[in-house]
Length: 78
Image (cartoon, rainbow, N blue to C red; front, side):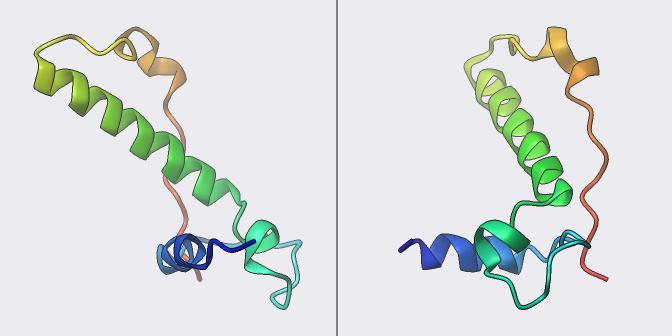
């Protein structure tokens, strides 16, 4: 994979890595795909969509599903 820049940016977020993956494993996909990154992705995506609709002056379609889009906060690296 030739997405080094993207992977470097994701690694800089400093989220907790899966405990069952060796620290010597490749960043993507083994150390990258964690619950903390998934949590950050949902939170960021929802904020972006709600903000976009807010700028348009329209109620976001996600407002009706807000209770289902609540996730734990990402854990930083220990």
